[in-house]
Amino acid sequence: MTVFDDVHADEAYHGLVQDVEGGYTRSIALLLPEGPAWPLPVYELALMTAERAESVGEEGLAVSLVTPEPAPLAALGEGASNAVRGLLDRARVRVYLTARMADGRFESEATTERAWPPEEKVVTEELGPFLRTLD
Image (cartoon, rainbow, N blue to C red):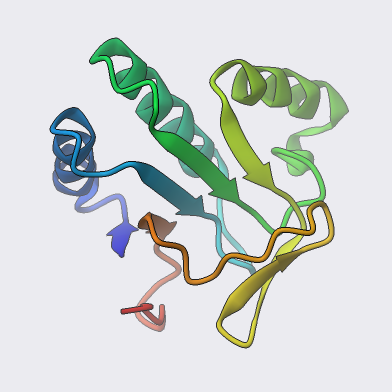
């Protein structure tokens, strides 16, 4: 698991991009934690990662975004949410909405798929010193 935080953003993302470019990573899940968090960086990372993979010929990379939100960037309103949903769809980023952790797996009202822990590279936004890692 890679924990993304503002202090180490360049280092964490650089390592992720290297794995994508080298073909070492076939799928990536970006998680927005429950609770107070600014969601925009997770969406940016999902879109940038999908774009980078395509630009280096790694179109097969699966990018997933897992969020407790009822809609993409719901806090910014319906217009922003619809615009972001369109960007995510065009970038082929799979989105799991209303996702919650339960018994070490994620559950989402928006999908019947249950896949936790995933067999993929996981990137999560740091909540602070009490973030639990899933190793």
